[in-house]
Length: 244
Image (tube, rainbow, N blue to C red; front, side):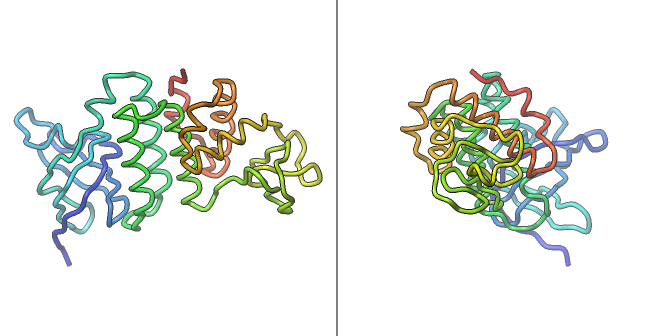
């Protein structure tokens, strides 16, 4: 049966539909990822057009039909996109975060409160320049992997659980590995790189912000490779991110 409901959501992306409508992909607080039709939003006199752009945080009323939901009301909570689009680096980081959020919520209408809260927190920190943009992105990716059940081991061996730290990192094995368990051609990140990744995973922003740039670059490369392995393909927007 058709029904009307309210929920808070972040706009992940939009697609044109017909002459004046859009299909809006949303990550909602209570109903997971949903697709909804926003009618008439491409018209210049639309009441909702600016409220339903990517990276907008909105309170919505939705009508649930046979195929897509339909947006019947939209109230802006905070339009992160307005601020982020003014800075190239922060906008490319936001684009990667939005794409990752969609990839981590593969099943529509499956509640994913933790992913929703991570997304809102990341966009808020990015828009308010709370921390370095690259660190926010890497922290978001690591924590999203953890919520999905793919948190990398950064101390003990991920294969045999031997206490670490260890020299080697295995994408297939799930993180740090000892000499005995390491696969061939396993990378050997610097210990401070793994410490930075652990700080990002545990929200230790003081330690993360004090890290050196070379370890940040190495951590970003490891995280991107680890993400690609578990999602089975990389994020299209990640290579566009401007790392400073």
